[in-house]
Image 1: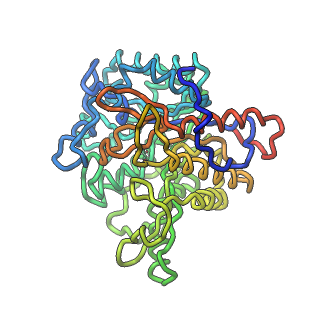
Image 2 (image 1 turned 90 degrees about the horizontal axis):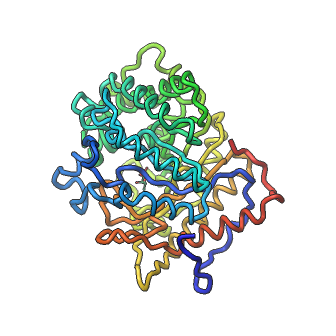
Image 3 (image 1 turned 60 degrees about the vertical axis):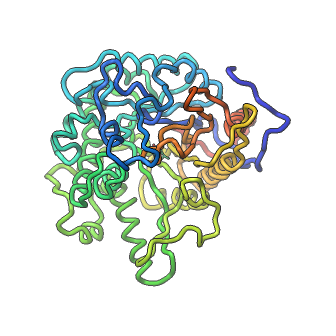
Length: 464
Ligand code: FCB
């Protein structure tokens, strides 16, 4: 054990109550650009985030991922940390430009060897690797050819997926194609607040289509290649609620639900984009070729959902979250665990979903490190209440198969830079010292109690 549990002064929120079934997967999650550092080392090519961070004003604190948590150089220490938490699984992403600097053609052996060490190190410690192929750090060389707006990207992604599969696929438990395609399309190509920083809705919708198409074709290619890992995609979903009961707010909420949830879930499960959203987009709707929709709806082994909060929308002014009276995280997001149960029930009701993993959930809070401790009760409460929300959905028949905390450790929070801390492990960036927060001690203890109770599970198992 790399760290021991402080019992006497550890905050214990009400136990989430449920006993989860044996085989339910508990994990922690990270992504490559947010933790790895070594951005220009060992043959890695530049990614769109390396470039975007250099745009004046793009990142709140003017920072970038050059060093981040220096994870590439501290791999063994971090693997011990993960194992010490007692989790079943670790969700991480591969940096495409680290393994294939130009996004096509030559592979970078040093990059592949790094992920091989990561995967082998997890397996040696009894932790299942959950690998994500695209957590946003596209090779800049591909962006220079139009990036995700260019249909040629689809084949580059399939080739990349096959290359990773051939090297690592037989040793990982799961492969996710894309993390949160809505974020890539909307925040990256319509709002311009994430890389690559473009601002055009028609481009964003074409990007969303190419992401989905490359997902479906990658699944087909990996299966044809004999893949044994579970295959899926990760979506960021929220219940979308109207600010008032007015007809205008209700219509707006329905549309936003269409853009956020149905735009992705309908093609994945029904092979068609939602008609109301297509009508709303008009000339901004994507160009779709014959066969695309059938490819997108390739069967999923699992669905990953990232949940942080609900969305409240109003037809005129943006909704002011301070009006709701709910606690807010340091991101200004409402703490609303009920929304997670609602979302999971709705997704299960409206779509023939496979096993669902909550692949990200957690909160940024202003932490205080003192005398080697971080007493992050707010984060512990956040995680415990959302685990309870997952349990409530499971108890009502939703096929929940796992839960992963975002994030293992504090890291580069995209446009917010290093100011927002999501970790259950604190990172002191000047020294790279890791300090286990109270929330991590609580999580470990919760998992120990779950395991001690197993055998007499009261909930049906749906684990994949
Ligand atoms: C999600 C991202 C993840 C992290 C959390 C806070 O949208 O997938 O990388 O930034 O939000």
